[in-house]
Image 1 (tube, rainbow, N blue to C red):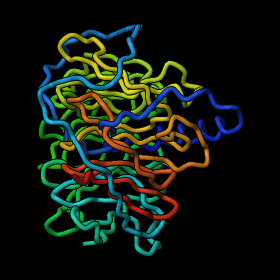
Image 2: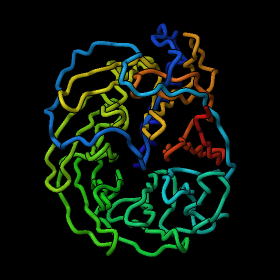
Image 3: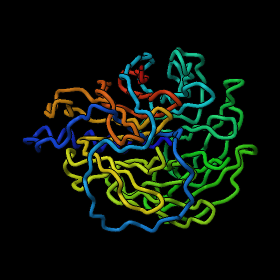
Length: 392
């Protein structure tokens, strides 16, 4: 996963632009239930397995806007959100959660102190366990991505044109064990069905899926798909998001490149929770207030819930629920203030409702990742890594 940065950069600019004009009246009131959010790099998804290509593209959607409170027989999620922060050196970028720990990409060059590479954090305490140099991580301008596959942590080069290198770090030794070269710049990286997949593109428009065998660190297949962008995994489905902010998310058969479900007007990844596909959607890309969180029934392709949620920029799923990051200005009392902090909220996917109150977090974020019981957020300028958990 970890292709969050372009979306956050675009949202950040929208928030700046929105501050220059009178904001639209807010459309969202926090329910006294649960809230959620899904995105990032490595996603631990809940729900049922969904057959690939069970649906056709939805085309132009006329969506009903429903509120919270669906009944599923599941006990409701209760509690409140709590944040803790680990302070690292500035330059923290993407991250993933794997092998019980958190792996944070820190950018820089060979002269940086600490050097560019991975910082390994304890998944429970957030303390630094290791700093691992990775020579191929060079600079921020074209971000490095990170995910776990085949018992290894894989970090993309994140720089330049032409072929790029992906380095594999062995968690047993905290050292680079393998490298593999792909033919073009990497736009997305994901672990799926035991393989490592990279979306690559020579021009940032057309692209291919590259299949990599983690055991041998060799490219075993390249499948042209005609588009490029971040990759994500939702249940037993691989998805690609293209055309940038408020673009298109498409379900892919990685073996053939065939397309399944198509969702237009989406922001970031599609995730699976409570047996439903969830995504951030907008009907007005120029207005950051005009975002909602939509749930699609995989069996029918119909929208079953639409939660109005202004200024949402990221959505991720874990066993706790759906994690939601909202940009500055979204307040729980139905008011708007651009000086207020960004927030994280939680959605109960069974109740289809927000849980409790949001908590403030550093802004702007660099990237997001989820583990079983927590959301993790990096912040490039400060080096902060924030852990958000639900306490009952």
